[in-house]
Image (tube, rainbow, N blue to C red; front, side):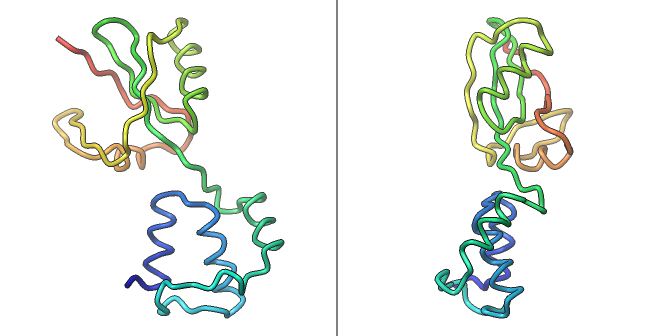
Length: 140
């Protein structure tokens, strides 16, 4: 079983905003400790206070995904964005055309860029602002 600290680390990694703020709230109120097992009783939380934390989002947690947008029959652009709509808008602004399609990929999928193989999640750490263009894939 995971500890509360390990669960919090996973929640941050996977950008699970409500879970992050519930755990932080319960830790700050002394209702749980980071070494407890992760079987947390969320009824111990002040739900209104956590709702405010989620709305204010002081940690700036936002779920960012990766999308492949087809520019033409051979070129695909990989864009990090919070939604498909945001990825398409970014593509249109950048390339002055609508994409032929837009497909979300899992962040755990590995790709090779400039002789480096990493997951999309690892590449995402290179960016601060989103949406962001990771790069282009060209099919031969």
